Image (cartoon, rainbow, N blue to C red):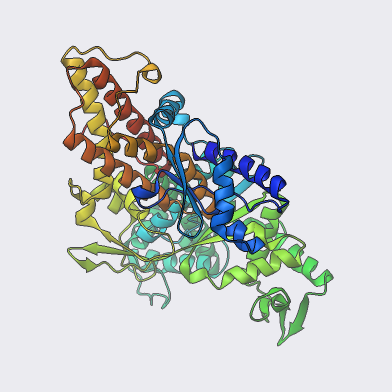
Length: 550
């Protein structure tokens, strides 16, 4: 809806510029005023335009206002230093509700990302242990962001980077070998940096059953075989947990494959051909400081082993070669130092470093009875994603993990997540949808005739200010989707849904829907249906269900 007003104002600004010999105006942006007294829509284009031309913004705004001619604009005026505020007719808002009822779950879709291919890489936890609640936040953010971008018209591919190469795999093999010996009753000194979780003991027992000859091998071979077997077992468990969490991937990319194919060596050689690799202290260094990094980085150690960065360079080179217009990586906050390094590598290899966007996921503080639960994979003290989902439900976990911006710390209160009260945000939103479904069921039970086609219902009886406010919120859905997609902020969806649910709950508590007056009843039912449509689609984007009863 605001796009139509935006286009009309843009056209007016072009006319005003021609008439006055002015340069074209800045892009016209339309927003919703925070205070109702300023109307339904507002734009600061005259303020920005006047400032650029060194003219009084109010003078510029007045010239724009004089040229505006739109049948649904009831009031247009200049406020403050040059803001243009508009108040729309009731018919305008009824038309907006009709669009929701007509487009149903398609409402809110956008062509913003048409023609763009985006890869979203997320979770990518090492296959050395089960997923915990920290990984779950990355999963919720990455999956919801992917759904959001698709809603905004982007072509999206979801990828999981399997860290199945390097030191952590050797440690996994050594940890399993030690536990296998313990299970067999052989005294052993457990590796100091080994993985100590109880899951390693269970894996060791299973390994002795499925790999009965593994302990006959030399220790190095046994550890290597256990590492490969254990990583596959753990990865299968990760896939099961993600499926339980309603997260799917289009591609699982193996880090080990980069070494096996020679991609890591080739990426380093290409940088060397460009004169960006040099030798010092018996190691190979990438001159990343030439591209904005704070210092140069080692890509191959003195012993000949490649660093994690070397694999990351090869991996992002591979991504860029696949033709994506945007690469979105969802990383833990402790990886923030890697951003300039990887961007430096992309630029050094001839790619635009700006194609890489990184979302940093801050820690989740899991609270039980008000006390934080410690989580360390190697220390063996952590609560798995599966345990949390089984305790409070997938919907609560996904929604709660998206209630704050991903780079902010988040407290996850297990008791709140289980509450059936308005204090629990997911319950509050889902209950709004269930309540609307209950209203419709009650109408059917009472023998009330319901419209076969909601979009043809006469909406003129919707004259209350709070009915208009609900419709305004519904019509803001598309703009919210586009804004969240541009800024890569999926948490905006939870904010929006909570605000919409609050408007509907308040309206329902103050107004009867199932009235004897058929015309008003059907109009209010149509309004309720519009709310249900948007709630349902918003929850789908979050990967959360929209129950019909609670």
